[in-house]
Image (cartoon, rainbow, N blue to C red; front, side):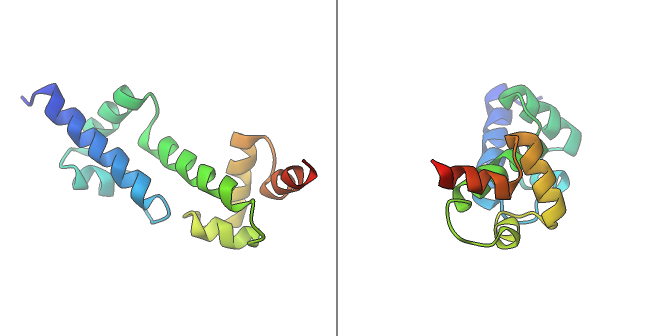
Length: 113
């Protein structure tokens, strides 16, 4: 129906939306609606374009921001909230799963260097 370039521009717009709003509450329905695609079509196109689901991309953006904030003295619960996680427990578990260390151990390892 639509030329591929048109669809991929929408996917790029969705990625930019995530990049700019990762700390806000975002879900698949909201993002797909913003770029005028059905949820499932958007999910498929995003994964095809970037090799990762929008949710995993969002998590990676949040964790990337958290890593930078762990260089500061902000309490971990504040960092958790600032980057868009709702629960310190889920933030800590995801951080450990993706980065191999809990946020506090990651911070400690940065200070040892």
